[in-house]
Amino acid sequence: MKLLWFIPTHGDSRYLGSAVGARAASFDYFRQVAVAADSLGYEGVLIPTGRSCEDPWIVAASLIEVTRRLKFLVALRPGLVTPSLAARMAATFDRLSGGRLLINLVTGGDAQELAGDGQFLDHAARYEQSEEFMTIWREILAKSHDGEGVDFDGRHLQVKDAKLLYPGPQRPYPPLYFGGSSEQAHELAAQQFDTYLTWGEPPAAVAEKVADVKRRAAKHGRTLGFGIRLHVIVRETEDEAWRAAGELLSHLDDATVAAAQARFASMDSVGQRRMAELNKGRFNRANIREGLEIAPNLWAGVGLVRGGAGTALVGNPQQVADRIQEYAALGLDTFILSGYPHLEEAHRVAELLFPLLPVQQTRRDARPVLSGPFGEIVANGIVPPGQRPEGIVPPGQQKPALKEAAS
Image (cartoon, rainbow, N blue to C red; front, top):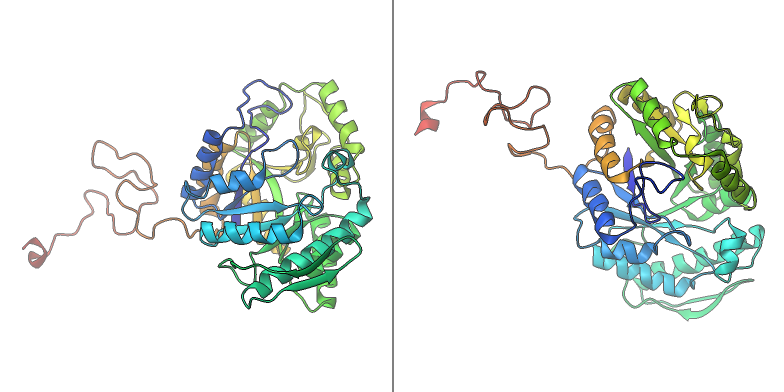
């Protein structure tokens, strides 16, 4: 199981829909979150894209030097950059980071935002363009190791003898991730991507998506991995977790919710429409679970005002771990998580959930030293009870040393 975290390049806060307790989107803060994720053992971080965010490629590049093993899931945007330039960007980043690049294709679902970026294709045409874009991009990178060029003459994109002179270390190219809920999105994922991502819908709906993409991929002789994007509100007890969910919305008002929902309704993203259908704009300050707990421990409150991923797992550590395992049983092995505020919640999620999950943790040292991750030393020499590094025995339980060792 791979767990990734999130870099909040659109800003961060303790409360949704409010400037109260807000944090600026600054390099210092991004660095803190990235270093925390790196040291805690997350597989990587998702860096969002869009006009509300800092540019993901520049942010990711700025974090290479301050991290050691953390991978960066960075967006490619067909129509905003050519596939040849995108291939050079990817290869350069992959080389400079030592093979730590993951690619997330984003077709975009907000016509107003896309028009501002000079992209005027409708939903269907954007997917046609995305298919052409990825075909060119993949071939350029794959053929770069042999020095070959690529010719392509499509409806939206054309290249002639497109070459990449400096290949990246990951062959044939960095792992490819893609999310989308439309039929065209499922078909594109099945044809060209390594991992299909879904936003956090109830398990039954996710199972339908997984089955559909698997079926389509099988027709192309391919198999994919699957992942999910979720927020997490985990606390020591279930009551504490739901109180924290209520706090997250405590500065929200009906007018802000209505404005956000109207804006989401104007988008042509099928995934965004499905998120909106989960919460239906229901906001009850007195009972934040009413109508918004759409499956056990799955809460749609985040999507009242946040675009994109709009659901959170809420509960105590065992409850949240159980829900994650339910998704894993459907075939999902990649979990891209986040929580407000992202710095503190990166620690909380790692401390409370990692011990309960089969997390792929290549980050942690095999034999932590005495000052390792098991708490503060008591009275200058007593290791706290509980999990302790291999080889360390609490005072009073040591066996007598052999004479040879004493010498």
